[in-house]
Length: 478
Image 1: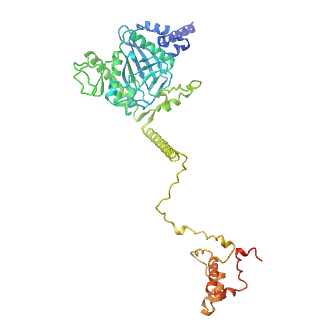
Image 2: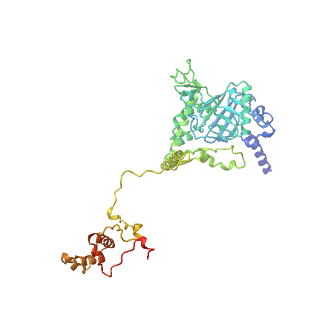
Image 3: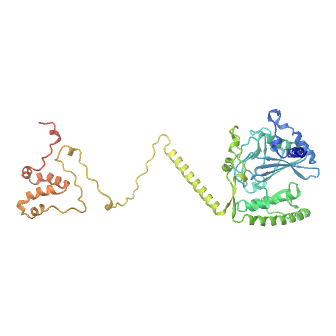
């Protein structure tokens, strides 16, 4: 009996979860004949009735990048919004932070009104809803970009991309709300749920001041459960402010006031928030959150692409790919990443320069020798012995280049000493002794010079002396 009760309880829980768990409410697209007129499932309409919602009552969309979630909120009979369904965003590009310029791959953050004309039934990405970026705030701050959508196909380059099964439901919910008279659907796009703990965890992010501004609108929705009235002045968002004057996005804010009931509610809310924030600061003292890149997010869900079209590119969420780190460890990691990126860019520049230099079949340029002569350490450099010339291979008549004498020479044999002391008239035998005891280069030089000084001496050499080499033209002679 107890087991049956557990089974029944689990079944009821699964049924109730069906309206917030997309896996239990998936759409069979093969049976859809007209995607723009798709009718919501019986489970979805049953959940609406349970929550006191009309099919055509207003909706609001909330996006949380970090966890990769898109929520659909819908007004009940009291005109307070309740969560109807939560979808897992299939792909969003870039990192946490607002979109600033065209091509930065960032998905927008902020408050965006969605009007009926922004619904695109003929999108190349199945169905699409244009976010309206840049909005009034973005334009006042010089931000640029076009075609930033919520669409299907699970492929993003600055958009929030869903699966086709998801976008057909979201499109139908917005369509029914517009048919019920809603003028615009408010899209609230946040980097994360702006709780005290999350704000403390991201306190060192360079976008923190922008996020604090968005948090005012986030908090007011949390308190009132109604989308806030949004205006822009002094290039910043203001929420639920009453004024007799108009709001100039780039001009000075007019005199304005917060409704008394809202002011009291927000004072109590902020008191509790500050208490929780101080507690979170102690928890994260000395720690910092590492925000992962898009590539790091894609890596953790790479297996989801298997068996799908190449265009299908889920990106995962930052909570799974990011991590808390010590400040010193993060600084080292970022420095290593910067060095690797700089090396990659340098290699790319060199490759482009080489391709440009060799364009049109030109040869690879050879670097010129440096005009600055480098000093040579004489003591460490040994001059190689001079090579014989080609002609010297066949004839001894051509003198060889003399090699420099060694720095320290062995003392000459004692036989040469008496010859050096003989009178000038007897120098010929001394010359012969020097040819035998000197270096080979010195001997060759002396032999080559002898005929020029004394032709007769050349013919009177001792028998022990090596004969002259024959000229090459006499090699084949008799």
